[in-house]
Image (cartoon, rainbow, N blue to C red; front, side, top):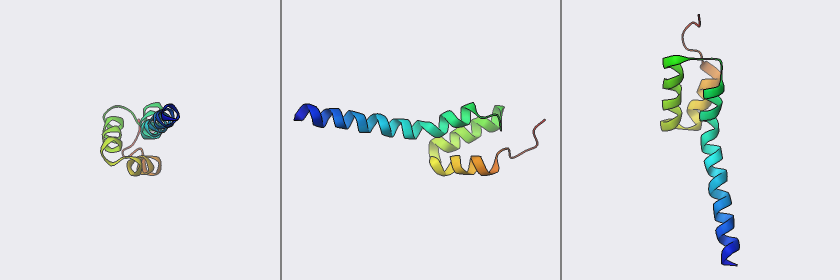
Length: 66
């Protein structure tokens, strides 16, 4: 029984880690922004989390892309 509980806890931790890293991976793979602007969006996601990723999807790119 203890092994099942520990296994379930590890599964939940892995799932939560995946959910937390998902916006970071999506921004890194996105072609909407590049360079410093992408870095700033990544920092915002690290500190503000999913809300910043939603803003990224709605607002990026902030400046004109050349």
